[in-house]
Image (cartoon, rainbow, N blue to C red):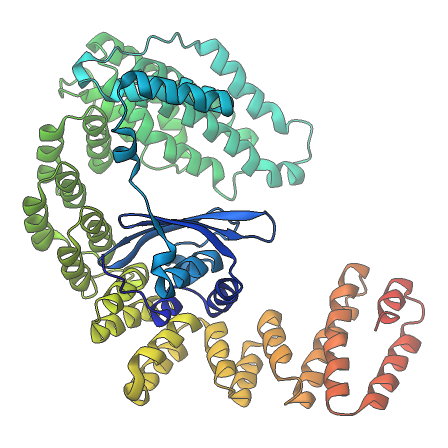
Length: 583
């Protein structure tokens, strides 16, 4: 792609703090070992908790398609929360913007390895393993998977693993008994850990399904269902964690039942075993379990068990299970047909893109997509496939569809900006802001709107004032140095919203010291009045803000007088006295 990146666009793709720090890294020549393979940029950047971080950025005509960095920063992809790219990615991209020739052109890995014959590849890999023995373990697990995927599905050997119901029963019972001996109040707080362990067992069953061993998965999942249900009454599940566990057990269990190719007799016997379990759990209010019995009653071919009744079950779960099975077995035509019949258009479209039927995918997408989230998912897939303009058209349509548009707008905005479509970028960012306001998006819209900011700002402020995000409204007022309006919001929030009061107090103490003194005093004295030493450190933090405001307004003597009064009043509280002596 041509280099369409600019500093302003990178500001849109990151938080102000990340951009500033990234710019500092760029200017200090912290980026090195920069290479380019077509539209793939790689490089290293000096780090704070490691000698360097490895960065990878994939470009396309829309700008940055994806980016990753090995640093701990956990929001390298713009979207949720709008943290944006980390400072190391920004530093690499600033290097690319200003010094593209610093990126040495390399062949991609396929071109590089394509020069070697089989013997050459074996020699090369052997040398690599000699240099890094840990690669051997990776190769042991990777080679069978690659080999299996390279064969037609009908030629793959089914996994022949003996699964012992007794072994899994003991493991599950051990997990369930792990809370014995604890008081009920203690066990309540440990429920999450126990459920995590049960989920790990369930995930093991998924591994068996992926390996085409449905019988092994069925043994694990039915054992989970019966053993956990038998102990359900022993636990305080007021937070619903076990209820969620059972609900999330339904889909893989239905998949295992439909995949296992059970005879009618086997289905009947399993039905008899599971029916009382399902009925008992349903009586506790756990939903969607009847679809397990429906799967046994109908089987894949819908050969109904003679003596069974009709069950009121969620057909969408049965359909999802069948689609997952067909997709796992690469039965493309059957998968597409069932998707279309069931109205699962998003999965239909994504599969058509995956198999290269782009025109059909675009045709169906344009006619059927009704949710912003589906438009985003399909637009991303089209972009990844190289159909950027079609992706943009669909994403633009998505802005007018139902549903939350934050992720869609945050994804679309930078691409429109890269294309020079500023009005469309503003529409995308405004949609993201409307769904989930943030100071970062507000700042981007201010920058892009230019001379039209006077018309756009009242619209954004109306959105903010009608939203529950008072913290963002305060951020905006503070960024615009409208101190009194920020204080007014903090007052309305009430003393319970101490984090908001603290944010405003930290920003305005040199400018509005009287309010900071009053607000901090109220918080501090409220904590002291609780007469519990665990609150004293927090009280001292508020007192420190009081001190800061007193000193900023040249009233040191007033502060010292107030502090001495506290020490005198609470002379019999040694823990509090220890905190006061630090001030």
